[in-house]
Length: 113
Length: 113
Image 1: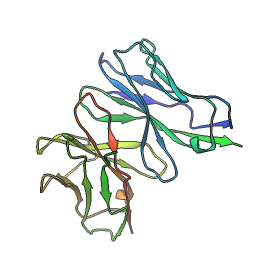
Image 2: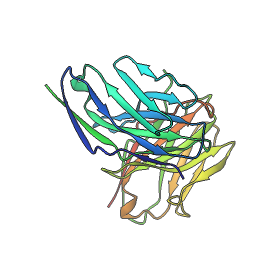
Image 3: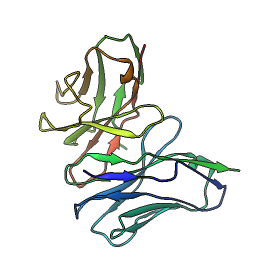
């Protein structure tokens, strides 16, 4: 079974600075997808970014980018120019052949003004 | 942008009662999912549904739970004889195909008292 591990229960960053959230996963599959979801206090799940495992190029969405290291099974999220609205719980998630999402434990991000 | 709609947003029920959580997936999506998030914990997979039948279910999804798509648009999760530990946020999600990303609903917060 696949597992996803987020080793940072909490992280904090100053507004306008950069922060990196870590995620590692374990799988025997070669084709899969990785996601970062943001969960604000409203508890809605908002897709931040996705990465296909067969793509070597790291995904980027505006201020959000990933560092995907397939051999190391690492998938970190970098948030540049952090904004107060970025404060939320962030979940890393894996989707393999079965189609279901397996989530990490989450990282609470605090943004200080 | 198309949305997954969940109702109600919050439901309070007495222990032992039956509840039905409703979801309207995006119309051209083919795969439907229910996930659960106990407060402060990670998001857990419950069940996936494709072609009018369950395609996969987790250990959590025991005989207490059932899903159905009664009219081709709604997708429901029924919890029979609710327990205190069923209190959680329940998310519905749908995807167009296996290679696509998820769209989550805004969730139903279930409180069992």
